[in-house]
Length: 492
Image 1 (cartoon, one colour):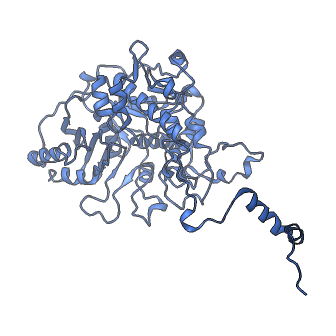
Image 2 (tube, rainbow, N blue to C red; image 1 turned 180 degrees about the vertical axis):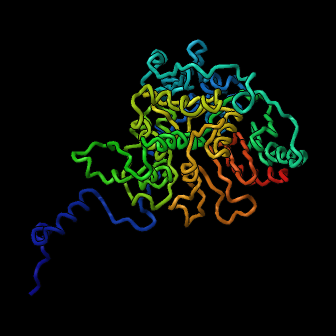
Image 3 (cartoon, rainbow, N blue to C red; image 1 turned 180 degrees about the horizontal axis):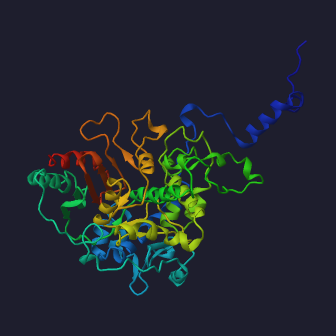
């Protein structure tokens, strides 16, 4: 006997799991995709924030270019903003406003997205405002009203002041080779590498100083990540005083808040871990989000630098992997803040502890709008002040017969981070080291490094400090160790 085919209803009743799947397929027309039709996640969901940050970048650079560096509008757009493609359209369309009285700038128009603003504040440089603040909110932004060191720096001898007493080169310096090294730095094979200043110290004296057209010894520009080396110096002073410790937990609450903070695994992260760039925390800036949701929000869009730094998840064991991240430095800076007595001491600490004591009168350490130092990048200074900074390290932490920084701390910053030993030993504690395999420069050399070519290179074995400031853009690629090699050709 031939049995009739079961009806669809009977079939569904007998096989309920199959029924559910089949109903879904029939109701919604879903079919199994073949390999060629697989979905891909290609949409940039962060694009609106990227556009906001792009405007914020232009605002902070235009503001600092005008009111911190004292450059004119055309110069700022042509050079300081050359690395931002959108700035060409901004300048062409006049899509910016400058308030000379308030020393502030606005970028953009409300109909095409949020207007981004930045304002110069006494003692700290320009501060980014968030999209929901206007120039009427400037008075509420932080500033530093702290008198500078006494005396006219032009009448004070180098290195504490600007007066140079010895203009002749010592016999062991080849002037023609030094000039050739300078030409090597300034006459680059690509216009994307633009050297704006070069300064060479030998035995503490300036033996070479050169500036590009439009720049002088007074011109301040952004240090970018060279600021990290300034941060670790300030932190080292507190470690020397016993107010901080390398191998103790950072000692603050993380975000988001949890019911049992003592159980948060991030509490195991130490100061050493973050200074070695091996916190084990989730990488944001290096994950392609620096200009969308990472540290760029505090750099360019008025967000809190501290909250962003404390909001990352722990994804690996601290100390095991090198991951260069702005937020790691900002975590150390927050720990520094907590180690100081109060807000006023924190605000004045860079000046009183370091800058004023070694003659860095032209240096501004910027903050976010909450008054927290963005010491991962946002310092404005000139070549001579950075040469003084390098000289402090060349002198093993002493200045004018006074010890400002212990030799033990200097040893720490130039000792390879354990997490880098298998990848070239090229990083210490917020300073960069000569990588393994590089044999054309002394192994004891170490260097700061900032975006767009900001370098302070210390070579103890040759009693040498080299400062190179740049406004590089595009592919960049200026090699500080190549520069060191070229300068050393002049030292006999």
